[in-house]
Image 1 (cartoon, rainbow, N blue to C red):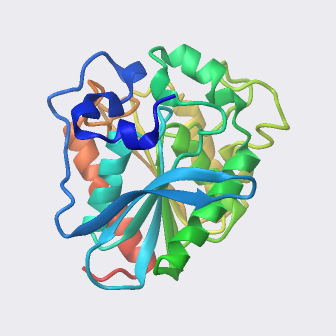
Image 2 (spheres, rainbow, N blue to C red; image 1 turned 90 degrees about the vertical axis):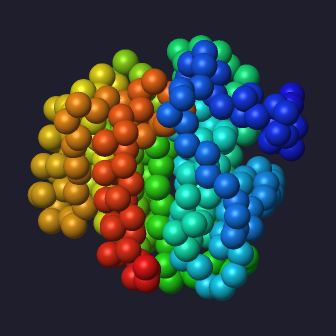
Image 3 (cartoon, rainbow, N blue to C red; image 1 turned 180 degrees about the vertical axis):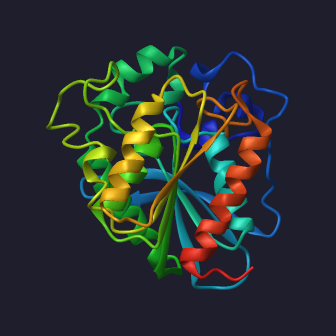
Length: 284
């Protein structure tokens, strides 16, 4: 299996994007430099083993607010690392752990269906929650501010964001088009040991405000489940909210894919920045 260091080499850069997401990289791809940043591949010491990760933070300063970055179904690849650098440019220490490494390498798949069935559906939610706790411990030890903790995630990671906000207190979280209700889903089997709850089940248990960003044309996230989640949040009198973008489908933020919708992606990023600023007291 290719090492993380090899995957990050400049002459192999094209391989760091997910093959199963498409045959080519869209011309809209955004590439954020690391000028003014400290960034590197890292090891995070989880309960049972070390897991790889990537972090970026400002080159100067200290006590940076922490943002966990949870990947889409395609794992820790160049797009997710770029998102971490974008957040670091905003003044955060951003850490993207590889939450899939025990089950396999998402970048080795060239078919989404096989990726889901052979890898993603074998990752226990409890394992992810524990790995995210370990990632936070790493961030705190590296100078992150333990009193200002946020998280954002995309697609598969977007689902985990809702669950993590119910797992532990967060100042703020942003979930991009993550599955909200896996009950009766053609994707999620009835496996309580792996998936004991879905976001709809924990709407009344959130320990921090979550902003959900969803597309009105998302074929992977049925619109009725978005309405049901909104209703559950209202019943719980929770400050979280879900915004839906017209004309946007699944993965509308993924600038390296044909699914990218620039207007929705730009506005979603602005709302995410404002959400973190509002709830994490970040000075701009």
